[in-house]
Amino acid sequence: MAQVVLKRGWDTVAEVAEMLGDGETKVRMALIAVDLKSVKDGKLRRILPGAVHMWQAKMGLGCGMEWLREHHMRSESATGRALLYGLWRDETFSVLDEEWAHAALDEVRRWERVTTESEAVALAGEPLLLVSPIGDAEDYEFEVGPDETFDLDECGAVQDGDWPGMPAQWSLRFIPEHWNIGEMVSTTLNGEYLLIEPAAEAHLLELASADGIPMTRDDSLINELARW
Image 1 (cartoon, rainbow, N blue to C red):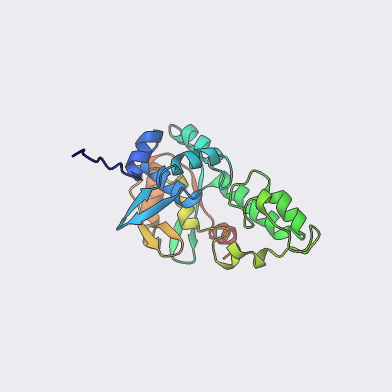
Image 2: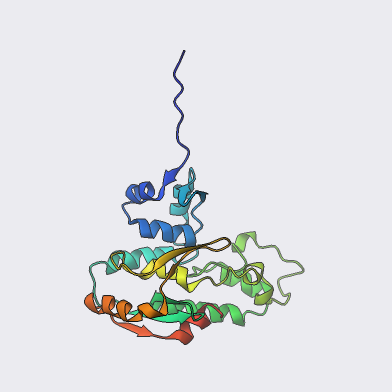
Protein backbone atom coordinates (compact mmCIF):
# COMPACT_ATOMS: atom_id res chain seq x y z
CA MET A 1 0.00 0.00 0.00
CA ALA A 2 1.40 3.36 -1.02
CA GLN A 3 2.38 5.60 1.84
CA VAL A 4 0.41 8.85 1.96
CA VAL A 5 2.43 11.91 2.95
CA LEU A 6 0.34 14.78 4.24
CA LYS A 7 1.71 18.21 3.54
CA ARG A 8 1.30 20.72 6.33
CA GLY A 9 -0.91 23.61 5.27
CA TRP A 10 0.50 26.39 7.43
CA ASP A 11 3.67 28.00 8.75
CA THR A 12 4.56 29.13 12.25
CA VAL A 13 5.55 32.69 13.13
CA ALA A 14 9.14 31.52 13.65
CA GLU A 15 9.23 29.82 10.25
CA VAL A 16 7.94 32.91 8.46
CA ALA A 17 10.46 35.08 10.31
CA GLU A 18 13.28 32.78 9.19
CA MET A 19 11.92 32.72 5.63
CA LEU A 20 11.94 36.52 5.42
CA GLY A 21 15.11 37.07 7.42
CA ASP A 22 13.25 39.16 9.98
CA GLY A 23 12.53 38.92 13.68
CA GLU A 24 9.42 37.25 15.05
CA THR A 25 8.26 40.57 16.50
CA LYS A 26 8.03 42.06 13.01
CA VAL A 27 6.00 39.10 11.79
CA ARG A 28 3.62 39.45 14.73
CA MET A 29 3.44 43.17 13.93
CA ALA A 30 2.42 42.26 10.37
CA LEU A 31 -0.34 39.98 11.69
CA ILE A 32 -1.79 43.05 13.38
CA ALA A 33 -0.86 45.81 10.99
CA VAL A 34 -1.40 44.43 7.50
CA ASP A 35 -3.76 41.51 8.00
CA LEU A 36 -1.27 38.73 7.38
CA LYS A 37 -3.75 35.85 7.28
CA SER A 38 -3.52 33.40 10.16
CA VAL A 39 -5.59 31.15 12.38
CA LYS A 40 -5.43 30.59 16.12
CA ASP A 41 -4.27 27.12 17.16
CA GLY A 42 -4.61 27.12 20.92
CA LYS A 43 -2.27 29.90 22.03
CA LEU A 44 -0.29 29.86 18.79
CA ARG A 45 -0.71 31.63 15.46
CA ARG A 46 -0.56 29.58 12.24
CA ILE A 47 0.00 31.54 9.02
CA LEU A 48 -2.10 30.37 6.11
CA PRO A 49 -0.84 29.22 2.68
CA GLY A 50 -0.04 32.08 0.32
CA ALA A 51 -0.45 34.68 3.05
CA VAL A 52 3.24 35.58 3.11
CA HIS A 53 3.28 36.26 -0.63
CA MET A 54 0.13 38.37 -0.32
CA TRP A 55 1.73 40.31 2.49
CA GLN A 56 4.88 40.94 0.49
CA ALA A 57 2.72 42.19 -2.39
CA LYS A 58 1.04 44.63 -0.02
CA MET A 59 4.27 46.02 1.41
CA GLY A 60 4.12 49.77 1.07
CA LEU A 61 0.30 49.83 0.89
CA GLY A 62 -1.74 50.70 3.96
CA CYS A 63 -0.22 50.99 7.45
CA GLY A 64 2.98 52.47 5.97
CA MET A 65 4.73 49.10 6.01
CA GLU A 66 7.33 50.07 3.42
CA TRP A 67 8.21 53.14 5.48
CA LEU A 68 8.34 51.02 8.64
CA ARG A 69 10.53 48.36 7.09
CA GLU A 70 12.99 50.91 5.72
CA HIS A 71 12.94 52.71 9.05
CA HIS A 72 13.68 49.56 11.06
CA MET A 73 16.48 48.50 8.72
CA ARG A 74 17.98 51.96 8.89
CA SER A 75 17.65 52.29 12.64
CA GLU A 76 18.91 48.96 13.95
CA SER A 77 22.44 50.33 14.17
CA ALA A 78 21.39 53.89 15.01
CA THR A 79 21.02 55.10 18.57
CA GLY A 80 19.68 58.60 17.98
CA ARG A 81 16.22 57.61 16.71
CA ALA A 82 13.68 59.65 18.68
CA LEU A 83 10.73 57.87 20.26
CA LEU A 84 7.55 59.27 21.70
CA TYR A 85 5.50 57.57 24.40
CA GLY A 86 2.28 58.27 26.21
CA LEU A 87 -0.35 56.71 28.44
CA TRP A 88 -3.26 55.40 26.41
CA ARG A 89 -6.67 55.23 28.13
CA ASP A 90 -4.84 55.44 31.48
CA GLU A 91 -4.01 51.73 31.02
CA THR A 92 -0.80 51.21 29.08
CA PHE A 93 2.08 53.15 27.61
CA SER A 94 2.34 53.25 23.85
CA VAL A 95 5.78 53.77 22.32
CA LEU A 96 5.99 55.18 18.79
CA ASP A 97 8.59 56.62 16.47
CA GLU A 98 8.25 60.37 17.01
CA GLU A 99 8.35 61.23 13.30
CA TRP A 100 5.81 58.51 12.47
CA ALA A 101 3.47 59.58 15.29
CA HIS A 102 3.28 63.19 14.11
CA ALA A 103 2.80 62.11 10.48
CA ALA A 104 0.08 59.62 11.47
CA LEU A 105 -1.70 62.29 13.52
CA ASP A 106 -1.66 64.63 10.52
CA GLU A 107 -3.22 61.79 8.52
CA VAL A 108 -6.01 61.31 11.08
CA ARG A 109 -6.72 65.03 11.01
CA ARG A 110 -6.90 64.93 7.20
CA TRP A 111 -9.56 62.23 7.42
CA GLU A 112 -11.47 64.31 9.94
CA ARG A 113 -11.51 67.25 7.48
CA VAL A 114 -12.92 65.19 4.59
CA THR A 115 -16.44 66.37 3.69
CA THR A 116 -17.42 64.42 0.54
CA GLU A 117 -17.16 60.82 -0.58
CA SER A 118 -15.00 61.77 -3.55
CA GLU A 119 -12.48 63.40 -1.17
CA ALA A 120 -12.50 60.24 0.94
CA VAL A 121 -11.79 58.01 -2.07
CA ALA A 122 -8.99 60.33 -3.22
CA LEU A 123 -7.36 60.19 0.22
CA ALA A 124 -7.76 56.41 0.42
CA GLY A 125 -5.87 56.15 -2.85
CA GLU A 126 -2.78 57.84 -1.44
CA PRO A 127 0.11 56.02 0.29
CA LEU A 128 -1.03 55.96 3.92
CA LEU A 129 0.60 55.18 7.25
CA LEU A 130 -2.68 53.92 8.70
CA VAL A 131 -5.23 51.65 7.08
CA SER A 132 -7.99 53.49 5.22
CA PRO A 133 -11.28 53.66 7.19
CA ILE A 134 -13.19 53.11 3.93
CA GLY A 135 -11.05 50.25 2.62
CA ASP A 136 -9.38 50.21 -0.81
CA ALA A 137 -10.21 53.20 -2.98
CA GLU A 138 -10.82 51.08 -6.09
CA ASP A 139 -13.34 48.91 -4.25
CA TYR A 140 -15.34 51.78 -2.77
CA GLU A 141 -18.98 52.01 -3.89
CA PHE A 142 -20.72 55.38 -3.80
CA GLU A 143 -24.11 55.10 -2.12
CA VAL A 144 -25.46 58.19 -3.88
CA GLY A 145 -22.70 60.03 -5.72
CA PRO A 146 -19.16 61.39 -5.34
CA ASP A 147 -20.41 64.69 -3.93
CA GLU A 148 -22.43 63.00 -1.21
CA THR A 149 -21.55 64.17 2.31
CA PHE A 150 -18.93 62.03 4.02
CA ASP A 151 -19.07 61.44 7.77
CA LEU A 152 -15.97 59.72 9.14
CA ASP A 153 -17.80 58.60 12.26
CA GLU A 154 -20.34 56.73 10.12
CA CYS A 155 -17.64 54.46 8.66
CA GLY A 156 -17.96 50.86 9.81
CA ALA A 157 -14.29 50.64 10.78
CA VAL A 158 -14.69 53.68 13.04
CA GLN A 159 -17.95 52.49 14.58
CA ASP A 160 -16.44 49.06 15.26
CA GLY A 161 -13.43 50.64 16.98
CA ASP A 162 -10.98 49.34 14.37
CA TRP A 163 -9.85 52.75 13.11
CA PRO A 164 -7.45 54.46 13.56
CA GLY A 165 -6.22 51.52 15.64
CA MET A 166 -4.74 50.68 19.03
CA PRO A 167 -1.59 52.57 20.05
CA ALA A 168 -0.59 49.60 22.18
CA GLN A 169 -0.49 47.50 18.99
CA TRP A 170 1.54 50.11 17.13
CA SER A 171 4.18 49.84 19.87
CA LEU A 172 5.13 46.45 18.40
CA ARG A 173 6.39 48.25 15.29
CA PHE A 174 8.82 50.51 17.08
CA ILE A 175 10.03 49.08 20.38
CA PRO A 176 13.48 47.48 19.85
CA GLU A 177 13.25 43.70 19.96
CA HIS A 178 15.85 43.40 22.71
CA TRP A 179 13.82 45.53 25.12
CA ASN A 180 12.32 43.07 27.54
CA ILE A 181 9.35 45.10 28.72
CA GLY A 182 5.61 44.62 28.94
CA GLU A 183 3.51 41.58 28.16
CA MET A 184 1.39 40.51 25.22
CA VAL A 185 -2.35 40.62 25.87
CA SER A 186 -4.83 38.91 23.56
CA THR A 187 -8.29 40.36 22.89
CA THR A 188 -11.20 38.61 21.21
CA LEU A 189 -11.99 41.31 18.65
CA ASN A 190 -8.80 43.31 18.17
CA GLY A 191 -5.99 40.78 18.42
CA GLU A 192 -2.87 41.15 20.51
CA TYR A 193 -1.34 44.27 21.99
CA LEU A 194 1.63 45.12 24.17
CA LEU A 195 0.72 46.06 27.73
CA ILE A 196 3.26 48.36 29.42
CA GLU A 197 1.77 49.33 32.76
CA PRO A 198 2.24 52.84 34.19
CA ALA A 199 4.45 51.44 36.96
CA ALA A 200 6.99 50.43 34.29
CA GLU A 201 7.69 53.99 33.15
CA ALA A 202 11.04 54.27 34.93
CA HIS A 203 12.22 50.98 33.41
CA LEU A 204 11.05 52.13 29.97
CA LEU A 205 13.10 55.30 30.25
CA GLU A 206 16.13 53.34 31.49
CA LEU A 207 16.01 51.11 28.42
CA ALA A 208 15.84 54.11 26.10
CA SER A 209 18.69 55.83 27.90
CA ALA A 210 20.87 52.71 27.73
CA ASP A 211 20.42 52.65 23.94
CA GLY A 212 20.98 56.39 23.60
CA ILE A 213 17.44 56.89 22.27
CA PRO A 214 15.74 60.23 23.05
CA MET A 215 12.21 59.68 24.32
CA THR A 216 9.51 62.27 25.00
CA ARG A 217 6.20 61.76 26.79
CA ASP A 218 3.06 63.12 25.13
CA ASP A 219 -0.17 61.58 26.44
CA SER A 220 -2.29 64.05 24.50
CA LEU A 221 -0.83 63.12 21.12
CA ILE A 222 -1.16 59.38 21.76
CA ASN A 223 -4.83 59.69 22.67
CA GLU A 224 -5.69 62.15 19.89
CA LEU A 225 -4.00 59.82 17.42
CA ALA A 226 -6.26 57.01 18.65
CA ARG A 227 -9.26 59.43 18.68
CA TRP A 228 -9.81 58.60 22.33
